[in-house]
Image (cartoon, rainbow, N blue to C red; front, side, top):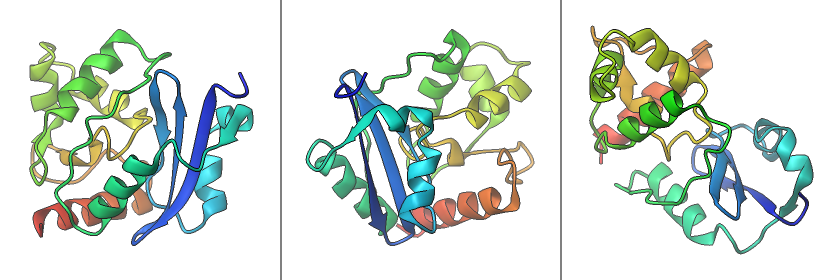
Length: 169
């Protein structure tokens, strides 16, 4: 597997971000972290079989930096979601349709994938999102407008920061 996977960690205005990709597309990105080491660790065990890339992700790095600087950026990148379930694929595809600066509810996503009673399962699929920002799970909130879906208070704080960043653009 070495040579097929490539990764990079880089600094942004909000912190260190990691990217892991395969020849098929992006596999993992991290939310901003306090250090390069933490971003690297969050890329998972596959990073141990990856080569550090200095060129492959240049365009994405520029777009992510622009995004974290408040730019309205699109991420049309090819994704490698091998290992995901068909349900996760549908949830993540629907989530990618949420426009920059807008939010939708877990129920909305469930309705988009024609599973209107599956909002809890949608939340579980989004909790497994390997590509935050690229698949903008931070734009999915509770029906009552409360933030949710992140397992710890730091996650909710990051979600709020991302929503604020997009709202100010």
